[in-house]
Image (cartoon, rainbow, N blue to C red; front, side):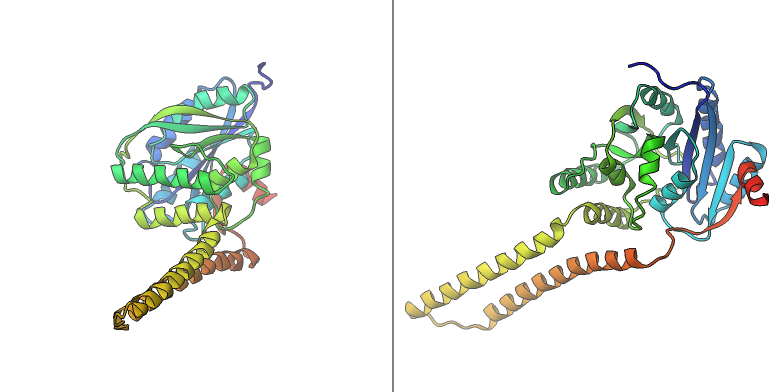
Amino acid sequence: MTNARTGGDLISVVVPVFNEAEIIRTFHERTSMVLNGLNGMRHELIFIDDGSSDGSYEILRELARADASVRVLRFSRNFGHQIAITAGVDEARGDCVVVIDADLQDPPEVIVPMVEQWRDGFDVVYGVRSERDGETAMKLMTASIFYRLLGRITNVQIPANVGDFRLMSRRMVDQLKLLREKDRFVRGLVSWVGFRQTGVTYHRQARTAGVTKYPLGKMVKFAFDGITSFSTAPLKLATWMGYVAALLAVLYLLSVFVQRALGHTVEGWATIMVAMLFLGSVQLICLGILGEYLGRVFTEVKPRPMYVIQERVGQVDEARQES
């Protein structure tokens, strides 16, 4: 395929930041070296400070003052990783947009082969993790189970061992910006949009500083957001659980008749308690599933913005604010 893009294109790099003061400067240095090495391409680095409390914003502000390619958005509070990605994509002006975390687990050097694939006509180039240092066997296993399950119960196919590290073309970004749901699962939204997509394999590094921003509780919520955003299977599961409970009740009723016909005494107390607890738990599970979907409807119908920007730093934005 011929190269239809010239060296004068602008590449935007979106970087969500939450308490990464120990590594931001190293990330900026490595990423800038990579971007400066791209053939004639202009670049901008858009950092989104997602309510950091460790001095990350102060460091980002210094970088923006010293480097004209750096822009910083500071949220009024912590809105979450997926919302920070959304804000950066909303602000990005590039012909292509890269999303990458600041922890350097995803090497900035992988941007180079991503750009090459984009120049060959792909709209999405995602990073595929061939190896994942510093992650437990439990996390790897649960991630594999989640993506297999998501692929089976939805029509959205997300490749295995893929995170949010990816490059997107301008037309993909324009379509993504039209999707304004608040409970966001960005990698699922990108897969849902479609267009031509391919992967670049890389070795994911262990975190060199700081701590993970996705402990078990957040991972579970993230997984549930992904499932409920793209599938009604949990609602169908609730229905089937009702059918199973009804079938068990009928079977038990038949067993009672058989026992009475054989002359066995039915004590009743333990059986009644077990049946009540079983049916009660099924009802509570079904109500919980319905509540999750109802809660998401409640969130979506409120006309609140997804995020609030407290401050912008960067020569372009300051000039725009003064005009």
